[in-house]
Length: 160
Image 1: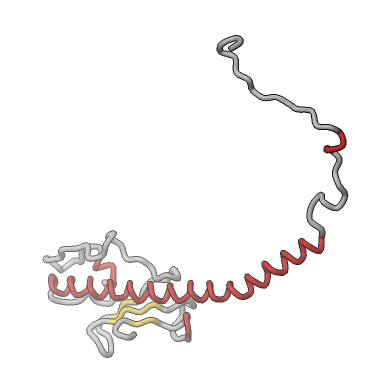
Image 2: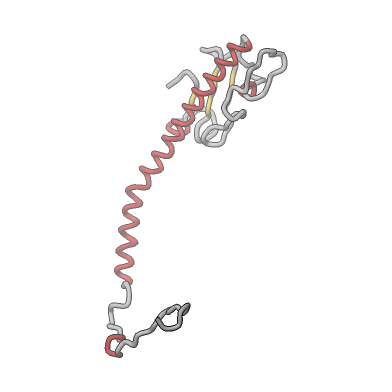
């Protein structure tokens, strides 16, 4: 080997002029080809987009139902320790922070020690006593207002 420690970085090779010439019409995509591709992508998005958005909204409803069930379990534990459910004024915060007048509070009863909002970013509504149960936990749905249909319908504890 010639000259130890030398590294060959690269080399260039001459290409004959005849091979370097570009052929006309093979340089890129035509406008028509680009429009066809954009149209196909648009059609795919028109078919797939609504389904994806529907799955997203359904998953938020399922997440809210699971959170309401979690609150119900935590409220049952609170009841076992305190002998009563939190009042409406104490709210779901009683599951995360000690309540005055409850000596046997063994919380926090919620994982993470805080009360999360519903999947749409709104706080859950807690009412005690409720009309048909000792308490009611309600998510106002995607619209954040009482009532509604579909994903904007209210989700209430004890209802499926």
